[in-house]
Image 1 (cartoon, rainbow, N blue to C red):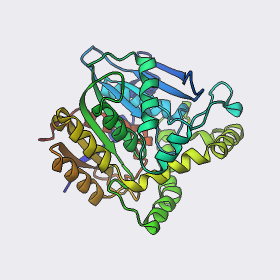
Image 2: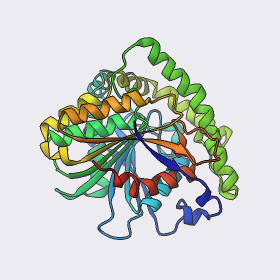
Image 3: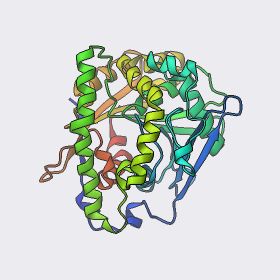
Length: 355
């Protein structure tokens, strides 16, 4: 059984957006375009610095399936950074991005043939090497620096691949990894049955998307004065941009989604075998109790694989507080109050796991 972590929205219902984090003036928020000088490949890196001291954590993260850096994502991660007192470095997936200054004419938004083919096969290493380069070009991380990793949904696969690339010393710098979080990893333990894959995509597009709109409605109810919703629903113009970009980028999006069928346990096992120091680093697999895109059995199986390779793993289930009937689904952290509650719990309760 997984440990239950309660998401409590009540403490956040009467706080200002400054206190919550997304308009907090003390945060440094920068979005920086990255371009590979040899291939011309381009995507964006988001840097949100909420640290109060040099001892506060640096968290490397990545965009999930079909997600780009937009106003809503910046706000979500600002809440995460503020309530975690952390620096969040968030890279878009190569091939799935847009030029924020000229979104209808995005250039360089492609994946190389190698990236595309290997992503389809479930190997995200070539993509994450580029993401690590992009993050380092913005953050100028030090060799041997302590970092944490956080990945949600498809980004859990990106994080697992980053860990493998670093463990095999396939990146120019080495970091001391102090923690890894895999939240809502879709198909975490290699379910290849086509009917289950189709069902999963259907649930993401129907059940979970409807829930996401419910979480965003919570944001509007609590902070109506400066509400920002999903990018594709902000205005007819942004809806047109979203459609245009997604149509152009359907191949890399499809390849990444198809790669989920292979599971992420192989990459983690490879990383633990390549670098035994990682066996002392906590890996935490978590999911929303009501999610239809990730499953308890997969988290438990993934954690067991980590333990089999000598690593330390724990599983957690995010649940709503007593009296709150809101289902905690795949995108629950899109609700700012839940994100704030999760960030606080991540610092306190989850760190208290007896790993």
